[in-house]
Image (cartoon, rainbow, N blue to C red; front, side, top):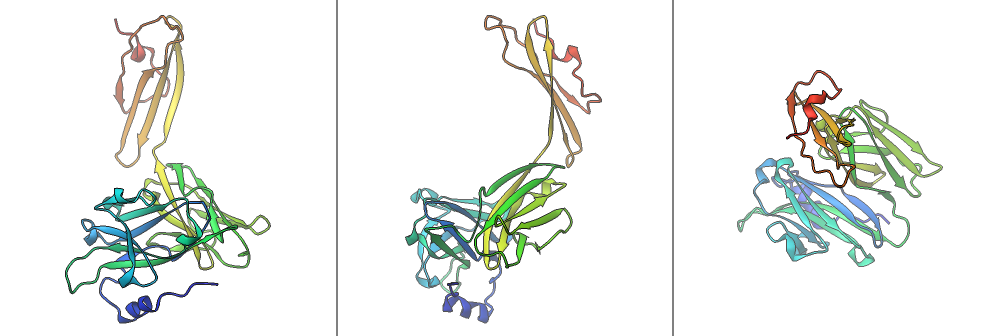
Length: 291
């Protein structure tokens, strides 16, 4: 049965309190018993320096504060991390049990006797069997210019619309821009492929099937190129590494010595940093042994 939003929360939405949209998160998540999940809680820039906390309970006024950013070590089972640069704090819940099911609140402490804290509500269901929607990994890494694939697995939701959403952004339900979605109803998995990755694509997303979501974080890294050469005189390997930073408009390359093949050899090699290298091949004099 789909849980109903608490009456108190509905009343808050109807009253249109200031700041009602300043904190946001997913709305409904399912996790298998014994599993774990990380929930991102996004907030407005004006809250960068405020204390954030994670609260559990059906009613907001009486919810139990599980963990706070000003005392994150008080609860080892539920670590909390704030990232003011990206205006998001995350809460990780591990070894979940049926008793952990219920309503949770991403909250920002405002302070003052006449001002309510800002918050967003979500419902977590811990199931003994297969959850309604899940991913194998919530953390995915891709290389700039490359692509990543996220497999969103579902149960008994073959006829619902599948979507890929960016946190605090828009959703796509098919192929759009650099996103491609393919739904394999036989194996109950829809695959999201994000192509032509850029550094700006780093961030939180979620798979959505019907009213369920599961968060996924994508990290886009800078590409590197490696070329291996061998110095026959000293029987040692060198690695030439070249990387291009598209955003800072710089090229960097350097060489470093790999462990010598001769355990008795004790030769020190110099490291060189070049700007704007023109060739990928390693000039021999750049990785010469020092006297």
